Length: 400
Image (tube, rainbow, N blue to C red; front, side, top):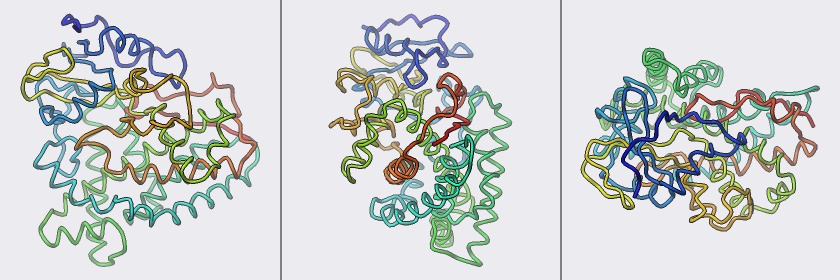
């Protein structure tokens, strides 16, 4: 039975033994008390879920709400409010169902596969430029950030010359230390920018997501504001996460050079390798947040209606009851795709086919084109993002 007394002096930013492993406290909790109360700010004491089986049970249950406006919702920031419905990640059904449906076809595997030639071309162009540079080069600046930015711009139909603007807004939105006013302003900036693009698409339509969403607005399925908000959501989610996965995967593979050949074994081996990197790294490191709508039993614990829950998916993906030797990287792991790095249930990441395609193309090409790739600084000299909702690095100096 998990304790009902909250773990004292608890914070989600905890010391790590190594930068790519979850804090050991979380692993300890998973083994001795997989559902336990923890202290957060403002006197909140939500339940922390650390076991894979329990994480899937919570994420797959309609009893738990994603709405951040519940009184005991364990939000990343104090004062977090419900966003417009276009930011459907924080909405329950029926809003979530309706808004997600407007985008479902855009991220079907068949449509994403049609993007693979463009992703390959963009990868080649960036690596060609990067390989011509001398001295230590920041992989984030020259490759891992611009690649997904270019891809999402092409997908949405956003002029790439505006990428610096939305990267700056995105940086604010994933920063746990940003104030409510700062995040609100970033959301508003993106929405205004995209609202202008909606009007532009009516004058000059293209073969892109924003144009197709604008058609839905003209048919009164959604509004222009919905289109702008959906576009802003995709811009944020479509580059920040993948950029950090590319950089962290590079660090991880350089730590395990004997496994790099798995990237060159053909599509099936690459697909398995990417799933293992997603499991091993799980860059959403502050957990997914829910609030119970009614009393529910998870494991041997009863969570009462109104109580908050934090699902620590990075710790759940290291659960030894679900993955053999989970703290070891194994790019041939047969059951790696059981991970919940993209979440689980109706709220799991809509863009996961695109993220998989990018990683499956980018990582083999990076190490094929730059076979002598290595860090230009000691591993201890890499500054990892400790305060952002998405774990990663701001800079990654490399040579080859």
